Amino acid sequence: MPPSTQRRIFSLLLVLTLGGLGACNSSKNIQLSGAGSSFVYPIMTRWIANYHQLNPDIRINYQSIGSGGGIEQVKKGTVDFGASDAALSDEKLKGMPPVLQIPESAGPVCITYNIPGLTQPLRLSGEALAAIYLGKITNWQDPAVAQDNPGVTMPNQQIAVAHRADGSGTTAIFTTYLAAVSPDWAKQVGVGTAVNWPLGLGGKGSEGVTGQVRQSPGAIGYVELTYAQQNKLPVAQIKNKAGNYVEGTAAGTTAAIEAFSAQLAKDPRMPIVDPPATAANAYPISGLTFLIVPKDGDNPAKRAALKRFILYLISDGQTAAGTTGYAPLPEGVREYNQQSLGQMLAQGKPLP
Image 1 (cartoon, rainbow, N blue to C red):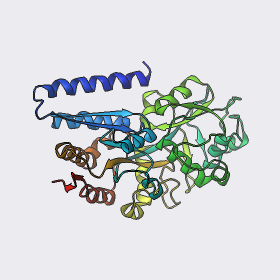
Image 2 (cartoon, rainbow, N blue to C red; image 1 turned 90 degrees about the vertical axis):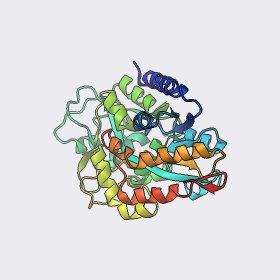
Image 3 (cartoon, rainbow, N blue to C red; image 1 turned 90 degrees about the horizontal axis):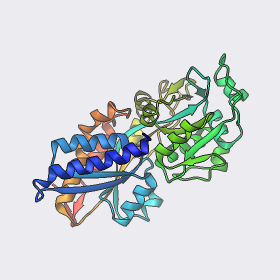
Image 4 (tube, one colour; image 1 turned 180 degrees about the vertical axis):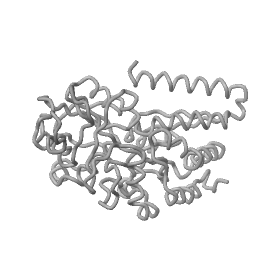
C-alpha cells in the first residue's frame, strides 16, 4: 500500500477513534486542528496518539500538506497551529498575524537513492550533491562521484533527480545547505521553501519524493529519515566539514545542534546546516522544525488545551522524538520555548 494511502487511512482512523472516545463526554470535548510539514508528520502522529491516551477529551487532527500550506492556513486562521521546517524570517512575519514560533523537534534531511547494483552506502560531498541538482553531474560514473566512492564500481546509469513540488520546509533546509557548500547554487538557484529547480521531477510531500525515487532507477531525492526507512530505501553518507562521511541519523543531528547550541539558545531560527569542522560527527543537512502558533485566540478553552499539548511536545514528548529518528531539543531551546509559551493569549489575556 502506498505511503500516501496509509497516511490517509491512519488520519481517518485517528479522527474516528478520537471522535468515538470523546463522544461519551462531548461537553468536555475540545477539537484542535493543525497542518503543515510532512517532515514532522511521523512524530506528530505519534505525539497525537500518545497525548490522547493521557487526555481523551482532546481531539487533534493534523494534515500533512507541506510547510508552505501550513503557514498559509495559519495566516488565514483556518487551523489552530501550523508546522514548518523553515522558520519565518522577520520580513515574512510582517505578512502574518502575530504568531509564536516554537521549535518542536529536529532531524536530518536524508539523501535517498535508487542505484541498481550498488551494495554499499553511497557517499557524496556537498559539492557533488549540488552539482547533481544543478544538472552538472548527470551520470553515476562521473569522476566527482567516483572520488567520493573510491574502489566502488558505479553503474553507467543516468541520474534522475527528484525534488519537492510543493512549498516545503524540507526544501528550505536542503537548499540552505546547498547554498552553503556551493557558490554556484547560491547564485543560480538560492534558498527557499520553493525554488526554480534546474531539472528533475517534482513530488508532492516527502511521500511523493519517496515514490519518485522508488519508481525510478538511478534516482536521487531528499526526504525525512522515516520515509526512507519505511520504504526500505538506502540513505547516503554526506561529507561534513571535518571530512567525515556521515549518515543522516538523530545522533548526527544532535551533534549538529550541539555545534550551534549557544546561538540557538538566543534565536532558534538559525540554520544548523554545514556545522564547523570541530563537530566531527555532525550530519550536515539537519534542521529544526517549528510550530507556528497564533499569539492570541478567541476561545480560552481551546487555547489552554493547545498550550498544554505544546508543553507536552517540548517536554515528555521529546522522549518519543528520540525513538522515532528525530533529535531531542537541547536545554537552551526548551527554555526558549517555555518563555515563548508564556506569551500565549486568549481574548488578549494571559493563559494559565
